[in-house]
Figure 1 (cartoon, rainbow, N blue to C red):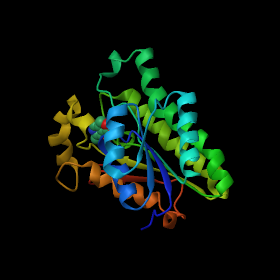
Figure 2 (tube, protein in one colour):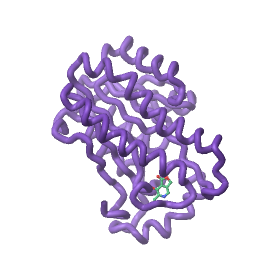
Figure 3 (cartoon, protein in one colour):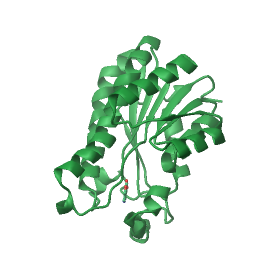
Figure 4 (tube, rainbow, N blue to C red):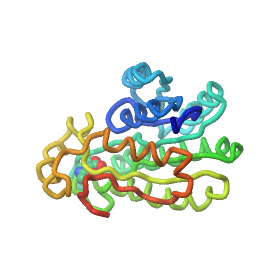
Length: 243
Ligand code: 4PL
């Protein structure tokens, strides 16, 4: 299998798209470290896929360092990093105060920076790495009621390209995957669930997006054979934005 012998960290892997990604990478042969703020869902996912759970707040630099150290202690290396952990808010833009803006930025954008920063020395020493950051088609669509989230994902899109430029010479690729509205637990438990009828109507493929629609795209970019793809954003949204 194409990820045999590979070691992957997936953040936000306790549920939703992150869990589907963890399942897919494990099915492709990877040893997966299931990183999630929620220790219970992380443990459940790890149990299901034969991986290891690691509770972590990705916005906390020391906790992220501990995550990467634990991974290297256990498995000897980190080949793949998938940054899926994010807060997906639903709030009118004029109800966002600075504290709320910072909260979304710190998890979604700072968290992505911190994990990349922590795995980098290991990937560079190995001369190999695959980093996949989960973006969103909201950066193209300008979706309402999550302006700070949109800004954080725009940051992830741009950071991904900048990092790709600096890491290509070390055998490390850095790409992003941009899902559209997806029927994850988080979305289904939020007011975003009411947007499915509207969004499905905009898609080329008229059905709800599922976490399992995103995972194979991530698995490809996480594979060795995707080595010529870097700095790209792959949109997986059923043709909503046709970007
Ligand atoms: C189209 O990433 O891509 C709502 C909430 N609608 O989080 C998203 C769309 C949401 C999206 C997203």
